[in-house]
Amino acid sequence: MSRTSPGPALTPRSGRARRARRLTAHASRVERREFLAEGPQAVREALLDSGAVEVFGSRSATERHPDLVALATGQGVSWTVAEDTVVATLSDTVTPQGVVAVCRFVDVSLSELVVPGVRLLAMCADVRDPGNAGTVIRCADAAGADGVLLTGSSVDPYNPKAVRASAGSLFHLPLCVEPDPATAIAAARSAGLTVLAAEADADLDLVRADTDGLLARPTAWLFGNEARGLPIEVLALADRIVSVPIYGRAESLNLATAAAVCLYASALAQRRNSSPAAEGPLSQRPRTH
Image (tube, rainbow, N blue to C red):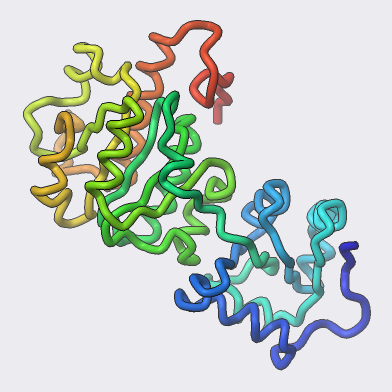
């Protein structure tokens, strides 16, 4: 049974606080397959997804978010009132939001993610910036993609900055971590996906790819490192290399922005060409923001 801890707030010396604090380190996250999700939005999504193990909230945050306390209670998750210093040590932000959840890892195996019938995947190869990785996850979720795959030497998706940048989308769609890009790409192709690599200097641009019907196919978009792009050996494994056209004077697009443009271009093309009875994320009724 979930409960809100009564009496004195949890102190930094508490064993539970120290155990949770260890999850700020990558090694502890991997060992325990748990991570921290900070802020009301992330905690809400973790609770709704049944991914939360425990929630720590400051007294003020507990009073501000009775809906979250009730949700935790309904999910059988303990809500622990903690001193502000405890919550601050679990936070990765300058101004802590007062509520942090300990969550289970959400990633699935490659064979679980890349299956026949999948229509749209985002694949990140050597994406090192956690903010970019989290934003790609958020964009893939918004575009109705079937999942996100991190490969090569990409950043830990459970890095606090990546979790925060995903804005709760980490809990919405399947996520896979596969170290070998060749294995990931081969699995995507075996599942009937066309692998499109996004590169700034490609001869084929997104507009022509759409006109040619390329974007209407089941697609795995491959995005590379923020500074170096995709390695030559990984580019060679893609079916086509596609660029996002630049119409203004900007030199280039941020990785996450380019990923959003590519994913939405495919999502729109696939929707135009799908039957009314199509199933899966791409058939869901869109929400506007």
